[in-house]
Image (tube, rainbow, N blue to C red; front, side, top):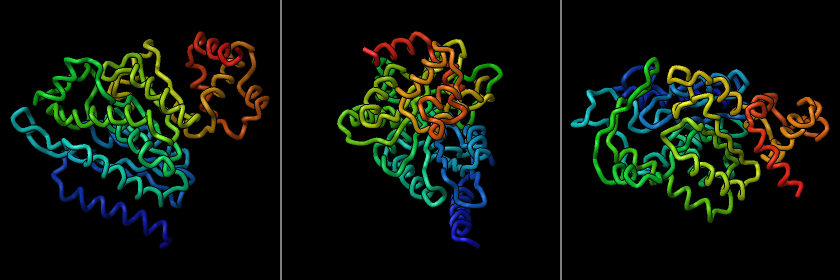
Length: 340
């Protein structure tokens, strides 16, 4: 066997052994490995959401695998464990940041052997962990995809409940949608990500480097504060000009759990397309806005603009999808600002 084959076999074997020792809810809770026959140009490391399981990232994982990348979706600490969980017997979710942070650092080190460049990503709490890694190990990460990161909370009542009261909260799943993982949790387990998020918002103001990040939100998301996401982007882009930010318009009605159709996002493929646009492009957001301006207001085709700006080798075909979603007034305002 090649060195690569030995490494991948060892990672899978050791992970399976650890998870076999756990009473998991079902096989869908196991870490997912979508691995090519050889080391790839990019390897994707995805962290599922708080209380969820790796199955949540299967659609986007398969899309990146089909694009030729290796993909690893590990089971977060304390997640996916079988049990009769309720308020008197809550699921064993960590209540300290270090458990998630050590987990993230471990997997970042593991996947570096699987690809030349590491792409990390996550949803909600998993996104918060990815954002922390983007600041903690910026030179080890090629791109970070931050889907609806859970940061601090500006609502004082919610902040008090999450930080102080040991209340058990049970998820309310929309009719026709499913929920991966646990049905509920105690508030101190969620507080971990709120504290980590606040640390990130404070830290990014004084950091000297960050990995390029794409923050992807939704105006229909009631679980996070988009103002905080925009603030995070504003701080990140000062450190790294290749950071992007986009929030899906309310017309799409994309929920917080945006990764799968099963969880209620009928536009799952749009989320995947804009993510691929970022990973496979090498542009600043200002360059994206210039392409959009020339397409939308000068009537030029995507290929014509890209060739004229000499960006052909730095642009993903999926960028056309993202540009079609951009708000026209915002593009005009950005162009006028650049011109003045």
